Length: 386
Image 1 (tube, helix red, strand yellow):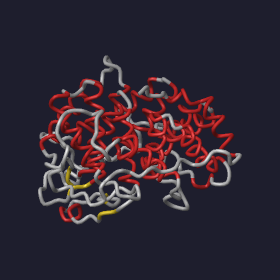
Image 2: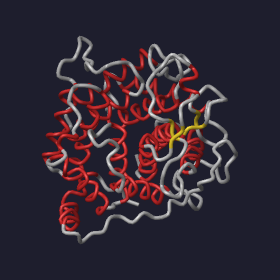
Image 3: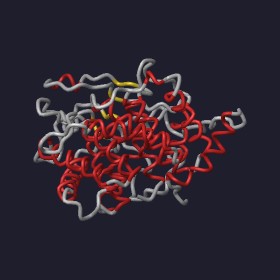
Image 4: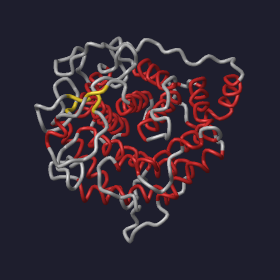
């Protein structure tokens, strides 16, 4: 299948959007997700083996599952009635990526229509600029819509967040939003990488890479994994997943001769080797990566799967070594999707703490955007070629 680029949709979306507004185009019907709601992530799973990332047993097709998840997001209300916050942004971005790689113009038009009130009647829902990583990363969403449609108003809105984030960098060239939590290595980098994708201005990519090198030096441990923060010395699964996805997104764009590339590649390879060693037999990763008594968790599994798949597809990782782990991870992740297209076994929203039980006793959620998002990202990664 030929993967459609973001810009391919421009003229087609204008037509689809006009028809949608006129009530002529129905919203995408959700197909059955084709997954097992009784999946046991602690047990051996059928059809796990092999390195293939293109052939799947019945019920594990990433196009079918990804489209069901994206359609489900489109019909889900805003997470909070007073402000758009990062979990919804992540899910919205994932739905757009699935729609793009599957060529689903109707779904993209519907996702664009969901955004339209943010320019008018729902403008109060926009998060503040230059205030916090979790707010600033909103800008990655209008930048994605700009890349898909070419409409300048999306570009202007997205860049207002990217530029506010670096309005007063410190002597090292880091944003004032730097706090050295591993979550930041998606939250900060996705905004700046998206700004680069939209403008091809290297300053945005340099910002992301500079920030990432600093976080690598501060937080990556000798075993290749990352503490949640300097004062939270635990290998939280989703937190490590945020960092893994962030590195994959930066490496997708960073030129081979960029001064930061070697350091980021070194950190990426060290992390992927460590993650390979702590993957469960069923293909998932645990809430705390290094604790066998911690429960297998879906959002971290999805993010790590994304980083592995992207590495194998781009040739950064040896396919013979990492391909089977990436495949097993997707099969595990797909097994968490229930009959309602809700991802189960998702760690609730998590602050940092210097307390082991704080992480071990986190509640499990179903349908939480923290889990819906990486499932869509990973489905899209499997459907594109790089």
